[in-house]
Length: 263
Image (cartoon, rainbow, N blue to C red):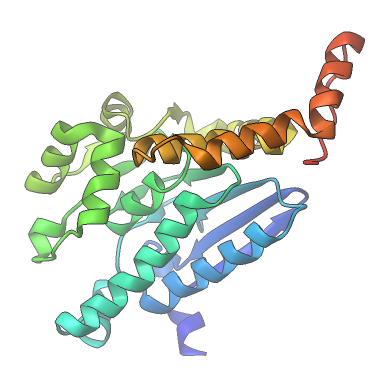
C-alpha cells in the first residue's frame, strides 16, 4: 500500500497503443526503486502482446514527465554503493529493455524532465515535448555517479558537446534549446499537445510493424558496430516474405490506405 501512495508506474491500454504512465504527481513523477521495476514489467507485458503496435511513456499530469529519482528515498534505496548498484541495475534493466523493444516508442514529455527522466526519454525512439518542458541532468549537484551506459546513450542523442554541457553544468534548458540540441524531435504548443501526440501515435500504428521492427534492429546493430548486421538481414527478409508486403503493394495500386497485420 505504501508504494502506491508514494508513487507507481501503471500500464494503460487504448486500442493498439500501450501507455506506461509514471504516476507520482505529488513528487513531480519522481522514480523510486519499485517504480523502475513496475515500468519494466509493464514494458514486458506490452512487448509480449502482438496486438500492441506502439508504446507511449508519459508522466501523470502536465507538470512533469519524470523529475528524476525520488531523493526522499535515497536514504533507504541508495544509502551506500551496494544499494546504489541494486537501484541502478533496476533502472538500467527498464531503460535497456525500452531501448531494445521491437515496437516504436514515444516519450510524451510535459513539464519537468530531469535526471532519470532524461534517461527515460532518450531510451525512446521519438520524443515529443510541450512548450513548458524543461530538461536537466543535475547529477553533479547531487554527488551521483552517471554510469557508462547512461553517458553513452545521452551522447548518442545530443552529441558529446551536448552531453558535456548537460552533465558538467547541471543547468536546466528549455524546450527550444532541447530541440536545437536534438534532445527532442518536436516541440508542440501545450494547448494541442494531446492532439499532436494522438496523431503521431496513430501514424505509427498504421505503419507496417515488421518494417518498423527491421528499422529498429538495424539502427541498433549499426550503433553497436555489429559485423555483417545479421539480425537486420533476417528482419528485412521477413518483411519481403510477409503478407504485409503484398498488402502494401495492393493498397498502393488500389489507391487506399494499407491495412497491415504484422504478419
